[in-house]
Amino acid sequence: MSQETLYSSPHLAGSVEETAHHIFRAALAAHLPVAVWRLPNTQALQVVVASEIQPTVPPLEGPQQGFAFCPFQVSEASPNVFLPADLYFSGKPGAQPEKGNQDLPPVFWQELEKQAQIRGQLEPWPCHPAGAPKTIPRDAFEQSATAAIKAMQAGCLEKVVLSRTKTLPLYDGFEVLQAFSQLEKLYPTAFVSLVAIPGLGTWLGATPELLVQIDRHQVFRTVALAGTQVSTNGLTPADAIWRQKEIEEQALVQRYIISCFKHIRLRDYVEMGPRTVAAGNLLHLRSEYSAAMEEVGFPHLGTQMLELLHPTSAVGGMPKKAALQMINDLEQHDRRYYSGYLGPIQLGQETNLFVNLRCVELGEGTVTAYGGAGMTADSNPAQEWVETEHKMQTVLRLFKASES
Ligand SMILES: C=C(O[C@H]1C=CC=C(C(=O)O)[C@@H]1O)C(=O)O
Image 1 (cartoon, helix red, strand yellow):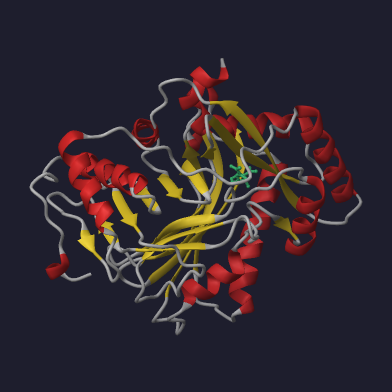
Image 2 (cartoon, rainbow, N blue to C red):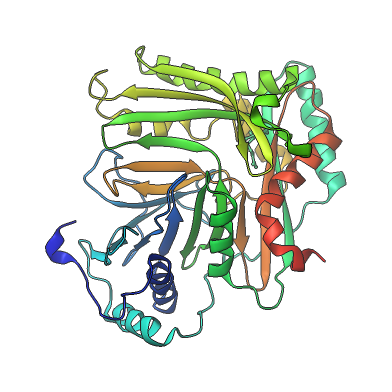
């Protein structure tokens, strides 16, 4: 994006947060797809607005800039979505929205001026055309878990991640931008995002799981994140003790990532961990993988690995094909964009894609939380249910008034 195309308005002279919120409101009012996010361990709120969505995610190594929003499994109702950065706000101090290749319609700019001056009412957010998913009851989830565990004990597969949904009526007075700000403050190390796409829906989340990063020095990174325990009584990552089951569960994700490197014959990667990391009040095991793309002779490593990694065994299972089949057979809901991936591509000279976990989908007067748990032959269905409840509470704790 060139400096000449900077958009400037005397009314957009407020704080970074105010400007990001004005842009989000204007996009909603103009019925345009929009994504607002904050990268882990940063302050800047970034925003992309697109004039229209594109159905394919471009190569991650450039030159196209924008925001990817992709489902767990592509279907007609949940297609891959790329929002070209027709407007990009970097959230840097003093920054103004930058214009991209396509002009946004005049109605957007009118709305932006309006929002900046009088802060009009927030327009309704877009909802999924099929409506809100039904809540999966505890007995149904535990029955599926029991069937999966039996299959793993019989040696049919090693690991599967089963998920569930919980839909609540939205409490009166809920404000989506306020919820986004709360999430951002609660989870400084998460990727916090709010994505609203006409015809597809509105998602809010704070995920701990990086899928693919390409930094400004062309270093590729990914992680193997799995194994969960609650950090009760001030348990810090340094004090955590893990059971065999979680160690194996995370080792399967590591093995999967390494098998992807082997598949493309990349040997010169760096592996670190596993170490215990905190995600809100949960602890996970995480290994980190990196490779300097030019030096190892894989200038398109990000794109290649994205294709191989998604969905990783942190959201699918091992072996991948059998696990995906089991998920399709046993889960009674459509995951839509939960456990898909999302994030900015080639913005601020970086690409940062995350697995869409610890997220909710907003409907017409409803909020739906999604959460899953990795199961092996040693799993216990009741414990897995409790684990999904803890994961859902990452975001649902903002909706306490809906739960009561
Ligand atoms: C599937 C989810 O988490 C994954 C990431 C970390 C730990 C996980 C686990 O312990 O099962 C899951 O693999 C979710 O949050 O819905």
